Image 1 (cartoon, rainbow, N blue to C red):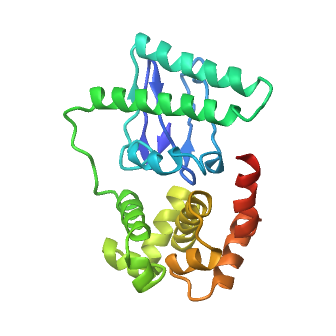
Image 2 (tube, helix red, strand yellow; image 1 turned 90 degrees about the vertical axis):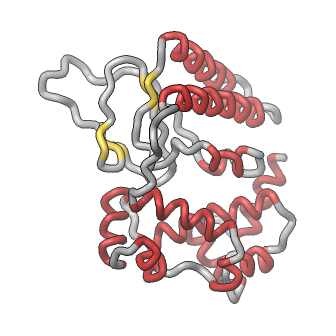
Length: 245
């Protein structure tokens, strides 16, 4: 399994985590009798909005190309994780009601917390590799969008990010295209929309105030970009959560 141009090699029980817009490639070996067996849990990012996990998921560092090691599980650890997955599966296939989302979210949080514990056990002596360009880019964008820079300086440009990472703009976009299938500008917009969804679902700020906080001079420009990316206007996106909750 190829992830972030690194190889996941495994034999027994293993877990790995992939964030939105990341790529995983599976190559079947010529001498392999059969392919890998197991389960995959797909979660749409919008499922988290308007829940504490929308913000807290950033604390789990294994959703990053910088943490390219797979998580190896003992048989006991495997059973714990499998039980959580079965609980999610059971809830998912039950009649959906107003409690369904919160129950599934709590199970996902349990899964992530156990994985965090297992990772700390496995890599207690490892040094994190923070020199990968994509990992540094993600860290910088998270800090940029969570700080005051965006109000003072506006949206980061491709040129600015390239300078921060000490590479050329064309090299950065080419590298991101290989790793994520998207260029630098698309990467910036993805981070912007992620932050906008967080503000729309967790605050009572107006669309204009959110646009200003995200570096837009005109709220119309923000609304147009948001609708292009999500197929919903900012207000429609916010209303969809108020109907659910």
